[in-house]
Length: 237
Image (tube, rainbow, N blue to C red; front, top):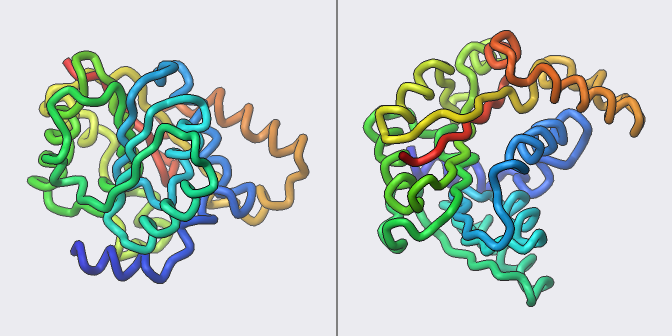
């Protein structure tokens, strides 16, 4: 599976995914809205499955110390090239696997963004290993933001074989069993992927209204069960 994922992303434009149009921007904007209460100034963040660093740079530019890690060499090259343009950022980049965080000390980070690994880990043991590694390198009461793909919408939109859909109750149970407390759970794009062509026609003010609407309903059960991308924010016990 690892080779398949590397091959997939080596031929995919991850750099523009979250910003290429209104429909994709919703996920990025709602995720940052969700995290703004939990990411503290001058804290230490690990971004695993960082892609080309959309979240890494967003938070590093806010003064967070970020370690950005991804499995795909192409992404690491892009990250390093971008980092060359921002010499003053407190940010490190390395290639690595979310299943092995042994390079890091126990309790090294205040927060972890796990925005991609659970999209691809089909094996339950690997899912729990990823969560266990996150817990180990988080400080006491540290924050884990774990994104996942809703299995129902994944199926409805075509069951892309490179991705894994998970049940909302399953992911909460997995986090609890891994030693976390659930503090937030939300849909990050809601029904947007299903009406993307319409959302892409919105002007700036209309898009802001759509974003406001999603902020209001993103924590509802119906939103979580109808979204493509969801986010669980959990705290290490």
